[in-house]
Length: 136
Image (tube, rainbow, N blue to C red; front, side, top):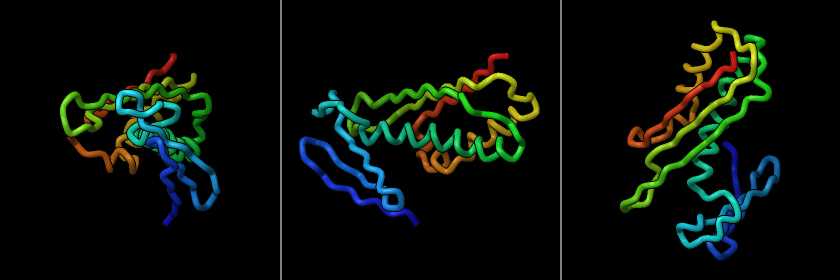
């Protein structure tokens, strides 16, 4: 169990403190929902959690297989509903993989992406488009 302490600090912002590390994170409502958009929104963090969970899960397998993933870049995009209730309807993740990812590792990479805990926690009504791009 990992605990967090979260405080509403006003003006549609919260400060979250990660218990074990004492790292602070500020959230802000997006500009299209009455906020200033000065930081990640709560729904932005869902997308961030998904992207970082996938690459972390893949990274665990890469360590075991001695595959280097350092330098992987991830483009993440969130699509919100146009109707009520306001919700995430689609997530697009594009992974630009580094050079020399072995061909035999690629199926493991894709399977790991599908099995990460955050991906398994996202409601099936949310479309998740995951693409891996290899330079070779």
